[in-house]
Image (tube, rainbow, N blue to C red):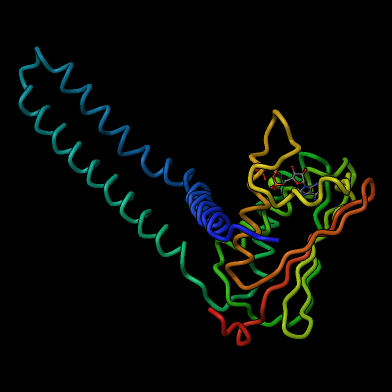
Amino acid sequence: MVEDITERKHTEETLRRAERLASIGTLAAGIAHEINNPLGAITLSVDAVRLSADHDNREEIVAMAMKNIQVSALRCGRIVKSMLQFARDEATRKADADFAAIASRAHHMARSFARERDVRLELDVAENLPLVRINPTEMTQVCVNLLFNAVEASSPGGVVLMRLRATGEVLRMNVVDQGRGIPAEEIDHVFDPFYTTKGEQGGTGLGLSITYGIVQQHGGTIDVESKPGRGTTISISLPIAGDAAND
Ligand SMILES: Nc1ncnc2c1ncn2[C@@H]1O[C@H](COP(=O)(O)OP(=O)(O)OP(=O)(O)O)[C@@H](O)[C@H]1O
Ligand SMILES: [Mg+2]
């Protein structure tokens, strides 16, 4: 079989970009909050100047407004600059890390989503797991993507288990659900960009393709096992730090 490698590389690069944007997205709420105060101050200052036409102390009001606008604009500028710096660092940085902490953070992020759907999240972490060389933001996103998919596939009362084990030279993470499962004719498509069965109310179909890209970037592998009507297990294997000489 002949494969168009250029095309695949292009798709992977597109996905990497999408992933970077997605990690910036998780910061967006915080940044919006930070920027809102100075923006509010700018709006108020402009209003003050506009309403000052007939005031005796107009000059004073204008000077004060100018000062406020300048300070606020500088503040916005600093926030944007640090955000860009963060995005650049975050996109490339890998470090030896404790995957258990990342799994636990992802659990935290998925908790209310699961609770709303009456799905229980469980975390089963072996003791003394070795470190893995990863980008923490990207791996958190991998875990969150898998947890959200598992919860979305589950019925109320269902359980989603995330299990972490070290076997030989790899760290293995399983995300196990008892949900609807994936029919045989769909299973080959789940990693395709924009493939989704979630229709109208959500689902870009990018979650698993981004996940696939991140796992590849880390020298790992990802597998799906599913029994329609019984549930799905997604397994990720990552090289243990020290063995990851290939990056
Ligand atoms: N645990 C699972 N159980 C059953 N089906 C799944 C599971 N995980 C993924 N799928 C199937 O794979 C498809 C693609 O998943 P993917 O995460 O890429 O996109 P999505 O979840 O539809 O959209 P998004 O992740 O953008 O919200 C899903 O629409 C669903 O049909
Ligand atoms: Mg998804």
